[in-house]
View (cartoon, rainbow, N blue to C red):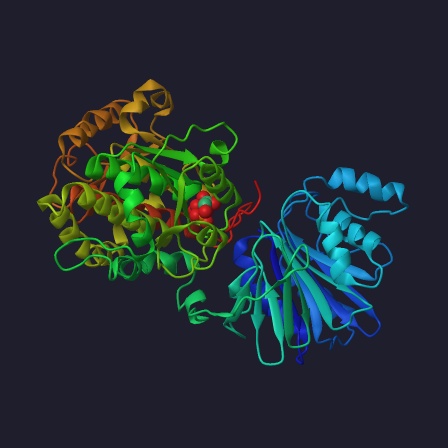
Length: 610
Ligand code: M6R
């Protein structure tokens, strides 16, 4: 997704902007560019493709770019194909005013028509160039006033930074729906869409909220509501080290994040399971009465976070006896959802910025639900807009394929399910058993991650397959969905996850000797025993079975072609261990195929468009 960085200070801006853009690469992009205050004008340089292309352009250009004021952008195309012209920054006509923008201007065609009628012409296909010209249309010497007037005409979402040559040491910033944060350093100010872009230089930041606008000048930041009433918000100190967002010696962020899971599981649980097994979640304390009365739980999420929500559905229904619905956030907001009284909605999101999820939570809240969140990114929009919730404490997740966030999300959902159970039934034997088993998870996860030889062998055998099927029952069904998502997004191999018994209602037609089928059978409950017959059905049609079972389980010995083992745990915690071999398998397959799993094609880390 698009990324923004801006700088006003005393150091040369170009290297700072390029560094910031490099730290934003993980969000996904297809072009990049910078704009610098340059003497009495503004110089824009932009290129389709990777940052290296922009760097090549800068060195080709050969000019000494010593400006100490500039903005940079990585674009992920929405309006107009990825090319040099559509890349940001965008000049307004006359090249006095320049703009970078994250988000989408929904009424851009009407605005463009109006501007064309007023004599404006356009170079690109973008909504951003329309906004740049709209600001210019209102410019009468006061940049803040012009941006405000333009934004009042705009429908859609934006995080923007605007510069005008008449104001060589200032820039105007504004946000609605697309994150923007201002970093305050010593005699220098940064603006970015993401803390990662500036954390090397400052950790004292001010988060902008929706419908806020601000002006950055030398060493100073003032910010306002769109009616220009001033906002006084203190800086927040972020405890977030650069090392945390670097690879720490691993070849890829995704691999680092997979391997971190024993630690992140511990971090997610830390301080939340008391010695006697009771659960304490600080972010929910204010809402204990509403949770005690909850008659329905709603999980709103996308992608991997949606799969975590599906695991949560099994957990809460079994442990607390409360009906749960898990909704794709994008679908929820556009069908007229019925929210009965005493509904508690949880947005689940790693980034806390997924627009579909944010809008779904707003919709649920506007219909009377208590709006809570399970989020990883501290200070993100969803975290700030929800009235309470639980942070994952998994640290920044950079790899586009979500891994450690999933296990931390499921861990938090186990904790929430136990909290709801304990509110209703007191601290019983089952609660205690589960919390004891949770404490052992980090060590068991380490055992799985330590020896990858068998998974690597399987990756070598199947990395040329064209299709994969993942089957599971109960809580392992969402894990099957997650395994399939991981494989397709980073190795581009088509993969489907199915409830194992559903296979015979259609997908069985696909089974032949070229179809590897990953069967998740990692526990020995009555319902899961039925997976043996589902596996028979695959073998009877020449399908190749890779089975995942718990140590000591011999049921698959004569059935599966290949068997992987995970340590035993409480039946409800199996997803937390079963997903690890699936993450590793996807990683190794992509690696063997020579693909860049940290930046898979067409994907963005944080999806801030609908
Ligand atoms: O940041 P979020 O958890 O809200 O993101 C939701 C999805 O975009 C995300 O999980 C996506 O599916 C990942 N690429 C999965 O690996």
